[in-house]
Structure formats: structure tokens, C-alpha cells
Length: 147
Image (cartoon, rainbow, N blue to C red; front, top):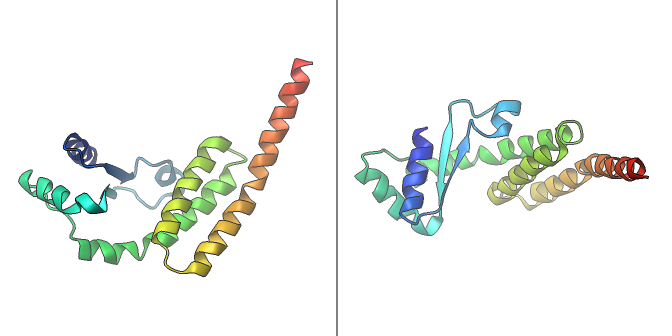
């Protein structure tokens, strides 16, 4: 709850901020974030956000500490992207694939290896085929029901 309050405080000051953590579908379904929250702010307003948090007497993780944690993030985002793509055709295709796309985007932002990025894009694209087939099937069934 504190992370969301801090995010709202930063938003009120004109600093775009996002909270990622246990409230994500990925944390509930795939695990991994239980009790852990990350507060992200725009790079250009990072210093202003830190100053604001200090005024509010909130300790913040330094950029150096954060960069150590970012090394783990690509794998976590990749796993979530794959899990949600696999679950997409079975459980609420649009929601799971949307979350899969979000995690793929975060993976691509944090992964430095061009080969791993390309592999992730290819795997993620192939994993979208079953969902597209299910949506096509649903569409055909809806058309036949109208007739």
C-alpha cells in the first residue's frame, strides 16, 4: 500500500511513476513478487523523485543498488512473458496475452544481449498463434450463431 501511496504522491508532483509487484496478475499466477514492490519513475525525474521521498522521510534504493537488481529482471520478465503466452489461449486470452506483452516489453528494455532479445521476440510471436486461432474460432462460432 505504501508503494501506491508514494506513486500517487509523485504523480501529484508531475512525476510519472509506476508500481510493479504483488498486485500484478503475474505475481498471483506465476509467483515471484510476493511482498516485493518496485516503484519506477522517469529517468529524467529520478533525482526529483528521490528528493521528494527524502522530504517524506522515505528511504529509497540507490541507483547503484537498483542496477544490481536489474541483472535479475530480464529472466523474470522473460519467464512471465512465456507463462502468460502459454496460459493465454486457455484462460482469458486477451488479459494473459496483454500481461505477456507487458513483460516482453520489460524484458526487451532490460536485456542487453541482442541474441536473447531476438529469441524472445520469435518465441513470443510463435506462442501467439494458439491465441489467434482461438479468437478466429470464437469469431466463426459467433458468425454461425447469427445465421
